[in-house]
Image (cartoon, rainbow, N blue to C red; front, top):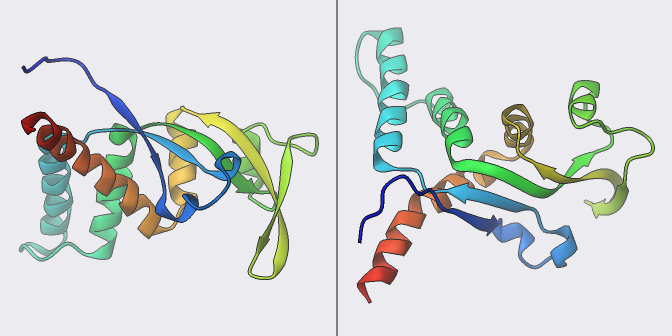
Length: 160
């Protein structure tokens, strides 16, 4: 049965976080990227490339970054339990209203103890974009691929 206008979100934990204690796992609330949205973004990235060169080419890394940047706000609704390094830029810390009295946690990263602020929940577009920029391209791609797979997984489940 097809029902229009209902957008369901799914919780997703990055593969690299899954072995961590649940209190340390970041949770992404992800919506399915529709085929129309994917095609529109791919066309925009391709047109961006075409307008620069006058001819079509494979997407460059900057075009792929454009795709990720544009796709992110349409698929990520909220991020919970995110950790930001205490040493982050002041503009990042001020956006999340983080200061010396904010909750901190210590992690051992590459044989160094590093201090992080813990953020309960982020749902504003600018905050979500800051998080996207702090993630590795592989992590961003993992979330986008999950979003693309939601429709396939749901459709396959319905067939059984």
